[in-house]
Amino acid sequence: MNALRLAQSHGLSLAAGIALLAATAPAFAQTEVLKEEDTKTKALTKTSTTVPDGWKVSAKLGLSANLMTTNANAAAAGAGQEGVSFQFGIVLGADANLKMGQHGWDNKLSVQQGQTKTPNIASFVKSVDNLELISTYFYRFQNPEWLGPFARARLQTQLFKGYLVRETDVTVVRGAEEEKRPAQSKIPLTSSFEPLVLRQSAGMFARPWQRDDVKLDAKVGLGVQEILVRDGYVVQKVEDDVITLKQLESSVNAGAELELNLEGVLVKDLLTWKAGANFFLPIITNAEVDGKKANGFDYLNTDIQAGLSLKVVKGLSVDYQLLLRKVPLIVDGFQVQHGLVFSAGFDIL
Picture 1 (tube, rainbow, N blue to C red):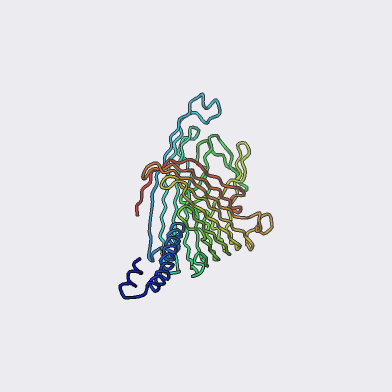
Picture 2 (cartoon, rainbow, N blue to C red):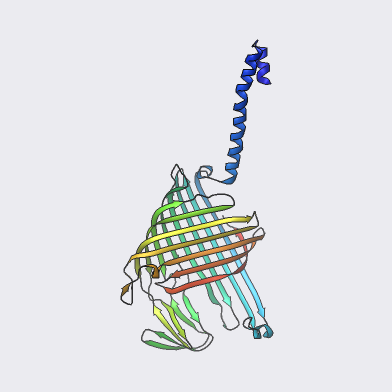
């Protein structure tokens, strides 16, 4: 109507006014449709162009504790050892990420520590000890911007000495030596920062889903992994009261790497989940087992992590955590750690 009045006020004919109105109407309609589509697109996904350049730094500290008492009747029914069990732990996570145009540099630090006291062991025993540092450089293509090359360095180890505690007297076999160890004593296995697993890899990454409710990050490439040890041992087998230890050996391996990471939101600001898997297949190695090169699928390195987090109130959550790790040149079997953790955490950066 505004276009029609404008035409009439300038002395244009009625036909010219109608033509002008017809010409402008589709333009207004097309603009409204495009705005609606843009709004839907922005609501479904966040691309790298929506993230401003510069550093983004964050750090979080979490404390967890669990206290449980088992009476004689529960113990008789097979529910556990009679007495009081206590567990406490610390979780530290920090991120420092840099974005400069199509370039990105992500750095992640994760520290997990846990101590457990059970009725059958007199002292606290280390139950969780994990330090992991990952630094990744990546370059996003202009089209598609969720795809590009990456290069990454990764470190994984433990902070404190590793040991074994038994509730009965045992005989420990280290190579040709045998040693009697009394009950409740700490049997030394590894030193601090041993074994130290380093990995450098490069390849292609893909982040096709970066929505608010679900995110996917995939990487595939080639890498080199070094396992560095000093004079550490791991448990090879346990038969009755005899524990046989195996000495660790340093090695260098080159091969293929595949990683998948998913995280999402089930209920906004309440329930979140995450799952990830990393596989490293050694193809070239200097390690030998029984006189044969330790490569191929029998020596596939596997790291699987998953979690479910329920936020009770700000700073307080209930989390289920699962870790499955297999490094055949260290322990020929899956290392499994999982449990329900009540944690209180707060942001320190």
